Length: 323
Image 1 (spheres, rainbow, N blue to C red):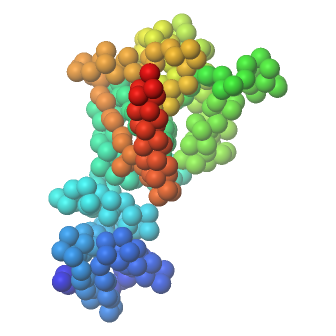
Image 2 (cartoon, helix red, strand yellow; image 1 turned 90 degrees about the horizontal axis):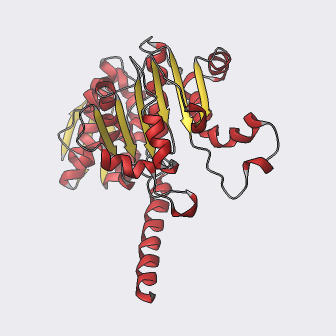
Image 3 (cartoon, rainbow, N blue to C red; image 1 turned 180 degrees about the horizontal axis):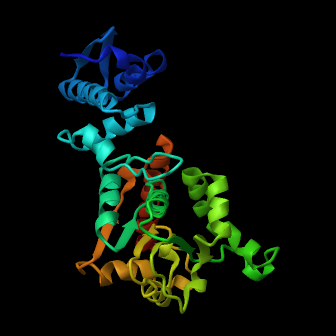
């Protein structure tokens, strides 16, 4: 059994509405949490007791240092300590958060996301791979926005390959901008969430933020810029080579993609897959590899990733057996 005493002024934030944060610890960790005022008692399996008590104690310290605690932080705290019991949660949240002058305070949701944030600050080329829901694009946009607001760069350039998904672009309605807009919508969504609609609109009008299909990058040199190539698994060898040579002085480049979701026609080789092999071990290049354990969307998204992986493995084995 674990016993601890927390700051009485922190009880509302620490325990949540109707003690919802404590109930989450009970359900997730299989423990019983009883609180009488600032006195908290945790009982259950040893590992569950230890994680629950460290989460509560850590968030009590975080509130004392001016931080904020929500149910999302509780979920993240538990997830992080399940990965590594030695992590200091206060340092985890306060040291690796993306602040700047953003509308939304962005914090890492697992150890790999913290590594991602730290790596981008120390490397000029960062390749980030992993399944949907791991925060690859969102964190890249947040880091770019923070760098822009803190005047570390003068502009953001967000790039995506426009792979035709079952329809020719020429047959889609509208002008060129309207044709490519669906491919770039996830990037817009992240920007609006992080900076707000009005600020993003102004920055787009002034071309401080530029969102464009990959084909528009040819022949350019991008100085003082934070450059993001999203959905990079759908680049060809030639496109990736062209993109990686666009970076000028005082710039930083993040390349994100999911190598299990390649949509290139005709079984063409992915430029991202090739680049991961070509630049492994090259100075100045860093690689972050997320897995299904890093999914931070709705809890069922991780099940979606797992079930598809099992189904694809079974299908490949069946096809190999028939060939």
